[in-house]
Each structure stands twice: as C-alpha cells, then as structure tokens.
Length: 215
Image (cartoon, rainbow, N blue to C red; front, top):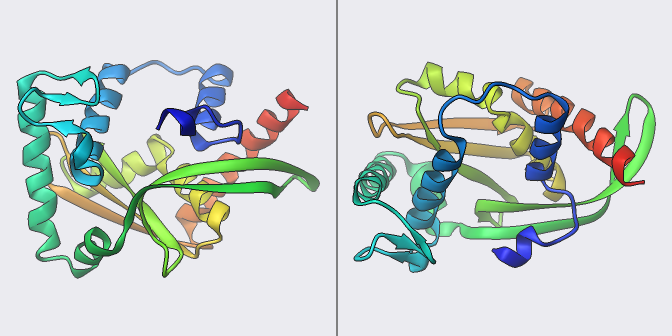
C-alpha cells in the first residue's frame, strides 16, 4: 500500500487534496477518524489478512474495541446482504481486491484544450474478466436517499468516473454500509449517465488545474 501512495501518477485522492486547497470548506466531524474507521472496514472485508482481531489492529494501527465491534457488525450486514443480492454475491466471489490500475499518458480535454496525465487508481473490487469494478464505503447515512445525496456531496461520483476512465469500463458500482444502523446501500453507474457525466465534469476541472501546476 505504501508503494502505491508513493507513485507519481495522479490519483483521485490527489485531486481531492487539490480541491481542498483551492476551495476550502468547513469540516464536519473528525475527518481523520472517519478515514481510519473506513480503513478498518475496508481491511476486514477486502484484506482480512491485515487484521489482528485479538489485539484490535490493522497492520501497526491500533483501534479501540468499540470500533472493531461496530466494523465487524457492518461486515456481517454486508455478508447477510450478499445472500439476498446475487450481484453482490458475485462481486465478493469473483473480484480481485485492492487492485491497482495505471494508465500512462491518459488523454484529457478541458474546454477544447488537449493535455495528458499519467493516472492511477486502487480498486476495492475489480472483476478482471469483465473489466469493471466498484467501491466499498462507510457512511453516516441511514436511508438510501441520504446515501445518494452523499454520492454527490463527497464526490464519490468523481472517483467512480475517474476509475472508469482509467480502465475504460462502461459500468461501476458503490456499496456502502451505514455506521449508524448497519444498513447496506448500493448505487450503480453507467457510462454516459447523469452520475458519470457529473463525476467526469468534476474531475476534468481538477485534473486540468493539476496539470497546470506540474507543467
């Protein structure tokens, strides 16, 4: 994981950092704690070998017992959902987890101006035989409506369009588990639909500003 974050290609996280610098917004809640907890849930579901269940650790990061218990309950909810949701069941069975995709000299166009960037992304789930994947999220949403509002608010549409365009996939998805009530929400994106177009517009503006900074 460390080697991935040390790579020089542009990632969606790099665009997020740039957005935070250019357009600072008030912070809601403890951002670092939310990221740390999301890492725990991701690891439990997609990289369980990194998790020490007896000592409440992921790699060398210590967690409190309450967070571990909540994360385990959230994982149970996702597994229970997979017994009803055939698509999710296939994702869990067929996907390569935490797969890195790299695209050298990816072509961009911003308001008629062409430029290139080397890009990267890291999938929670990727089905290589079908060339598409998706993302796992934790959320404070307690309903599907709140979750769908979060897709836009937290720029998850931008990340999904970014990932889709790196590998040239025509579809993508997000599964999210509520930290409040452990409900599982899902959201599907198709190339050309409203969510994809909105996400692409978001990343295209930021990618151009990023390119301006590095040339």
